[in-house]
Length: 265
Image (tube, rainbow, N blue to C red; front, side, top):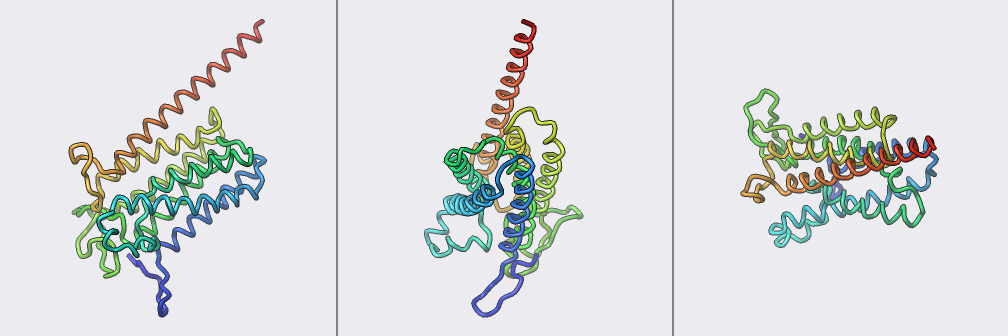
């Protein structure tokens, strides 16, 4: 709704970038607090947070550029203008995951415990970042006659202006905030290390898959032109998350049964 906060000469402060920074800071603070409770040094989370931020932005931007390669072949200098919008979450998630695996291995930190610490922070950070998307007008929805349809009027907005659109950015923010509440409520009852992370992946992929049907900026050129690229990735992530949860829960149950059997002897 307000893509630019202010502009002084060549300096332009974009609302999207501000919300992205706020989401990262809040997520990092939450992760640090959780890490302290579980005996993970604050310094490790700070370092990891920095690496995650860089890799997430690079990965998100890279996947977006690949998806919109025709435009960027003609406008290569626009590739670096990520603060104006144009980040694909799954690209950032993939690269950041690789970085986390590498970092925890190098520092001999418990990977899945770290993943569970990060998962709620991902959810709340994403929810806040989606408000930046709403401000910039990116990731906009299809035209709608529903009473909560939003009309973008700012000429700098990336959304279609002048007609009511589904506020898909707010759908995403609300869904992610709901996931955050669920994760912090469920964490005391988790069955194995890494479960919060895989539950986040499962819930996010389901929410993203559904919300994509209301998006107006996504081309549906996969699987008989029915699904977008994000939906295809969501299906893959969902299946992987379900697989890991089933495997680990069965493994956990198997270990419990073995211990019970041993105790009887």
